[in-house]
Length: 387
Image (cartoon, rainbow, N blue to C red; front, side, top):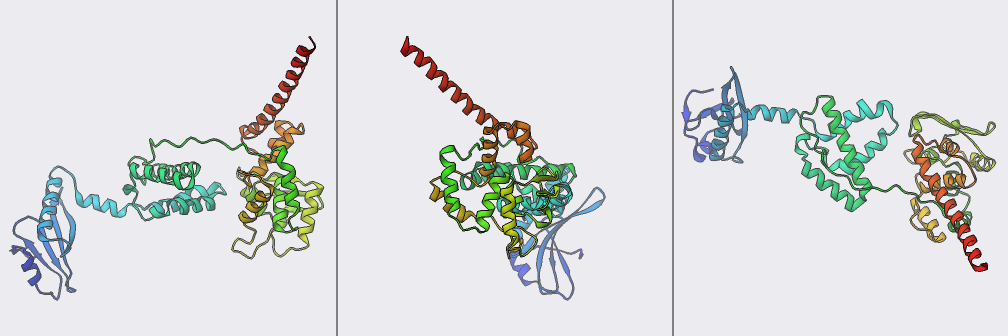
């Protein structure tokens, strides 16, 4: 670097020619500040100073985007911070090497989710749906305030449940970053209160079940009809029924084995099939086109959730606020009504948490309690009338 110093003014900088090799012009007013001009004519401001026996250098910006006055102010700020042990250059290097949210999420999938769980692809889809607009942001740029705003926005646009799940995902990503020593600051999700949630207890009521099956029976015997029937008959999750494979079906032994990698709790499950279920599968076998019971020419190779036809079915049956997943709970409810005990229902639906089964069982118990009280009322009132 040239030892000569220059009074760097706007006019002087503009009049410097384009050199054949990189040339430096030191500022005469602020120590360490200099102008770097490349053979392509690019003019950039830097500030340099020795700190702890080694040079500390900071890129300030390019001229004319940054004026000489702004460059001098930044250079003086650099010196002031360095005097109290704070290096802006080191801070900038750390920021440049810092992971973006998408980079951390990919590590989260690879090192955590995909190792032991089948929910990795679903988690990727959730990240894309909820957090993709933050994917290029550095971890330190995501503040607690911005997370709170996102939480409220998701609740307004997609519901409180989705907002809470997005919050949990973001928190889990940062927690793993801390564990893996990739993040040393606070988790921006910490301290944010989740919205209250209430678990669904919706099942097809006695006054709805007849209408439901009557309208379903009006449907052609196609994929939609068979899918809905197998859902409510087997009580399995829609994802498992949609992705049902012929290699897992044994029509002779009358069983359906769901591999552990496809199950939510990771445990292989073998389901004994009823004659009605066998009949549906035997009919589907006649139109087999690939390895899936519900084939599709789409990317996945199997049928996707039929949202439009489901909505139309419910409309004809005059049933409101009923989700496809509620069919699973409906089977559990009718099993309880038939006298099946809690353990049997838990096994049939492969509930890992007994509390999930008990919620359904408790509802049936409340109905039985209500009927018993009504009978007691009748007895008491009839006694009063005859007295």
